Length: 95
Ligand SMILES: [Zn+2]
Image (cartoon, rainbow, N blue to C red; front, side, top):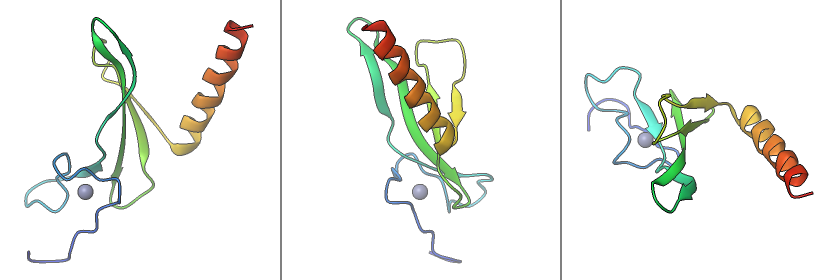
């Protein structure tokens, strides 16, 4: 390999990562997606993936494989807020 050695985060899934490949602009390290929840008939409802660019803090990407939107990207703090909000709503729903 020529040039500087690429350092991958420990969670980087090399088959999803294009950092260090020639000619790739804005390449991101990506983790293997984790299925957030699944429907028995349609499969994954939410895929959760970590990604980062240029060695910055990782963002959390929420994607909806069965949905029309592209997905939503959260910072670590926003993801923590979302988890807390979902936990509160779940507690309310379950009484
Ligand atoms: Zn990587």
